[in-house]
Image (tube, rainbow, N blue to C red; front, top):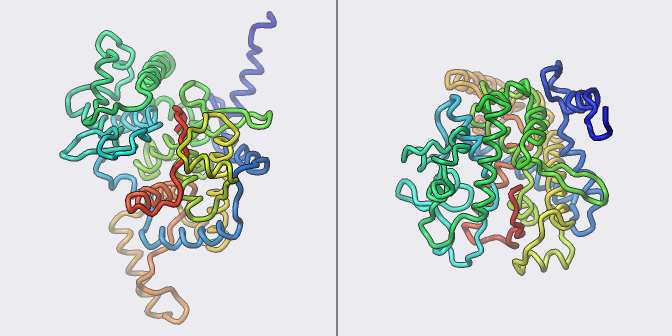
Length: 408
């Protein structure tokens, strides 16, 4: 064997350590290292810090609001643009969606001039513009979620893809060439190694969330969200993790979303969660960084500032989750998926009412919602939705940081 050739035994050992390949007897053994790397970033951050007291207070607030709103995987499918069917075509849609789920913020200050997709009589911006564009394309008979279509450049030309993402305004979708490249690259990988279907990736990962995240990062360069921080490799894997989370949420933890180790998925390090964590007082920035963000100046992808914003946010959400579990240990015994059927929910509610009436001095109020489970995914979904509402109401105390990147 020459020095340039890879050692097959070493490669096999590496794949096994990542939980990849057919030999993974215990999928729960796989680790993404995202949380471990986030803690390292937090411990070595200079310009982004945590307020332990605020984080604990916010954890309790988040918990009570999520319980009141009965926040669960059902929340994902309630949006009118998200897929409602539960089949392989939905898996294709979610893969395409999260393959292209990055960088929607606009350079335009005037909202009327910002990139927007017109669909179903409405204008959609941000993440929802992507979902609307994909749904519109399917309605128009364009098989935009088919990997074999992406690699057929005679039919799926760059102009066709540009048409799919056509804007109702003069501003076009950011990073269109990069999106086209992601489609072509992922299409080639799927067609060559996974028989043209992302469901085969799920099978290869043995329904392990961590294994699937690692498989995505290993097999698809456009999901390899890695960088270096103070001389150490750091994995953030935002889009790979949100893809797994979307599958889990869409399928309510069943079928293609039945991951045995979903708790290993962290929050998704983007620019919205740091914004809401700062709004809540959980994150604190150094004066130079704070001024830079408020002045809407760009922060380069892979810079220390950007890594600290993303890494410390992941760790902050983990601390929020741990605080909720500490104060409400009952959540650990609640199965996060699948949610109960309507009949089961009615029976549980009747039983709870009966118990409450018999032991009213010792039990919870009949009006208090039943306890549901918690993980970083649901906390992330909640924080993202909350930040969008805060922004819509004009109550944000800081803009989100500006980084142009395919990673988020």
